[in-house]
Amino acid sequence: MKNGIIAIYLAAGKSSRMGGNKLSLPLSTCTIGSSALRTALSSSLEHVLVVSKIADSLDWIDPSLFCSPYSSQWSPVVCDDAEKGQAHSLQRGLHAAMSMNPKGIMVLLGDQPFLSRSIIEQLITVYNHAHQGDFVAASFEETPRPPVIFSPRVIPKLMKLQGDVGARKIFQELEGLFVEFSEARDFYDIDTKEDYERVLGGEWR
Image 1 (cartoon, rainbow, N blue to C red):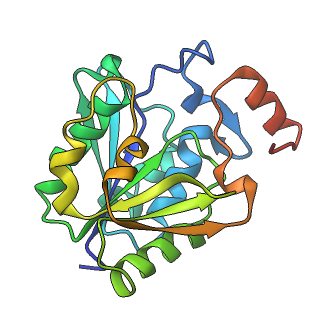
Image 2 (cartoon, helix red, strand yellow):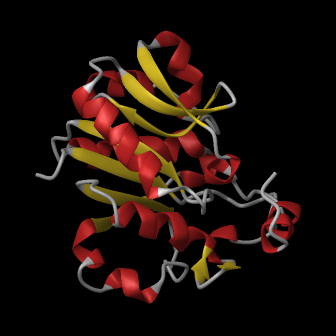
Image 3 (cartoon, rainbow, N blue to C red):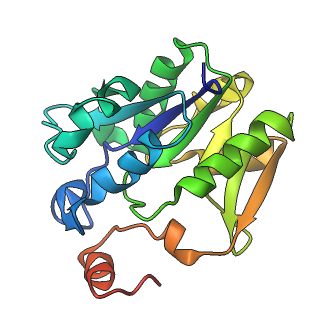
């Protein structure tokens, strides 16, 4: 194994604030959804589980990612009840990840297209070599942000989340470490048409 870290790439959102599937929107040479996925697949992550909703054709994923060497580094995971909220997509991914006996599980979002490989690698390094707690998470302006790596021992707590709630809610119940980063661009998430227009215009905040 490369480092035992399995990633869950959450890509099953409703995109209700966008009015359409935001992951399929063009961005530079690919799509919003393919951007961070390509970054993840280019990192030292052991494997990436792409969690999508029912009937998602995955046509937002760049064709090159279905070919070698990328094709062996990720697997699709369908969440039957994704419409109930992000917690359900997360839990579907956790079930799949735990079957791979991971050393840690990283949670990534499909709508953070500018996330850098260096952030993924720094979090992996800290988790594997400098910390023995429940999690290692990125932070920007002293606020927790994805990605985050969870220890398998906290999965039971994550499985209790409900509705449209991410893992951030339980940080206060866990013992972990936040790694501060300084580039806003890395954590820019695209939720609305206005967000997308700002990105196309070269604005990140």
